[in-house]
Amino acid sequence: MSHDGIERDGLRPGDLVVVTGGGGGFGRAFCGRFAKLGARIAIWDVDAKIGEESLRQTRDLGAEAEFFRVDLADRTAIESAGQATLARFGSPYLVINNASIYPRFDILAMDPDIWDKTFRVNITAPFLVSKTFGPGMIASRRGVVINIASGRGVEGTPGGAGYAATKAALLSFTKTLALEWARHNIRVNAIIPGVSLTAQPLENATEAEVLERGRKQIPLGRVGYPEDMAGLAAFLASPDAAYMTGQAVAMNGGRVLLP
Image 1 (spheres, rainbow, N blue to C red):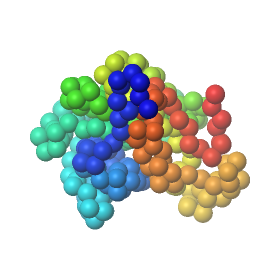
Image 2 (image 1 turned 120 degrees about the vertical axis):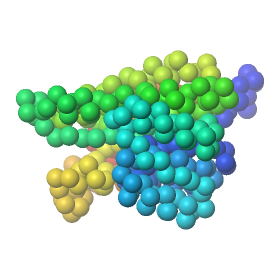
Image 3 (image 1 turned 30 degrees about the vertical axis):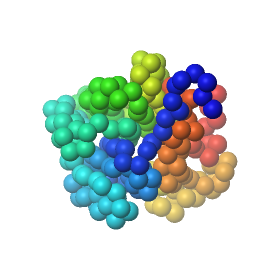
């Protein structure tokens, strides 16, 4: 029980959850999990087809939800989507900065424009999204931000320098935002997913190959699934995590053991 007068807050039915990249594997799982918890869902994605599919699935679970098509590489588009979301739903309780891109090029072969776009989507967008929704969260003195990082930001990865660099930056951004917003009763944490059955590993491998990689390389003997990450996100948004901020939680089956 509290003896300090500070509320142990968590997601409540009717709270708004904003999910960037809400049409993809992790994003769709986040939308579904929080829909089941009674949240309203704002789905952001650049791909209208998968965004609308995620919207239908989320509404089928009984949630009030809306899809916003937004290119996270475009600052103006982020600002417009933010204003449209606020006008439709009001201020969110939870923001999940999930969207990212993974261009695969060796450093000498990478076009500087692709490098720049990777940074705009993967790290500048989370900054702008947080800046957009932060004032309302601060005014209500409640809220959670979850940034989806990557083990590549800790280990690095050949052929993915831009992606790895942005995910390392996102981990640092998480710590700093957590320190700045703690006094407003807003918690900021990151999830570091391991190899999961999502579009990114399936770009260069079949589903069977990814599953076999999990059996051979992951201590728990399997890859992750979007639902694994959604369960962790639900915990981070709950009162059970009310004393947790500025942390990066790795969910990777033991593949990377972080201190």
